[in-house]
Length: 91
Image 1: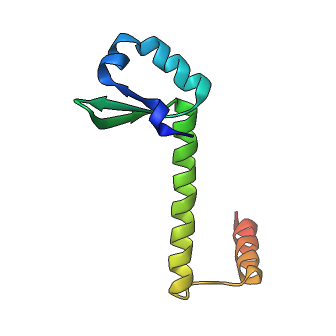
Image 2 (image 1 turned 90 degrees about the vertical axis):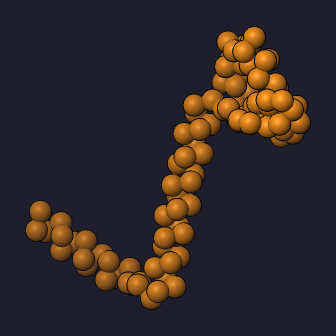
């Protein structure tokens, strides 16, 4: 995706808001909004935003897992299964 084709001035957004929203939903590509020639904001459709947030959450979980591995806080699959089965039996 070339972001150079997805750059519009804020005046364009003001004049064409409904069309911009429709295009965001159809193309699912972010739009860079400029003000006085400088990039000031990026807008995107809700579905893409939600996907991005889910991806970031998964990456954060992976990063936290790597920190635990580096600190030696690991358990074998067998140990984890035993612990989970023990919890289920108590519930």
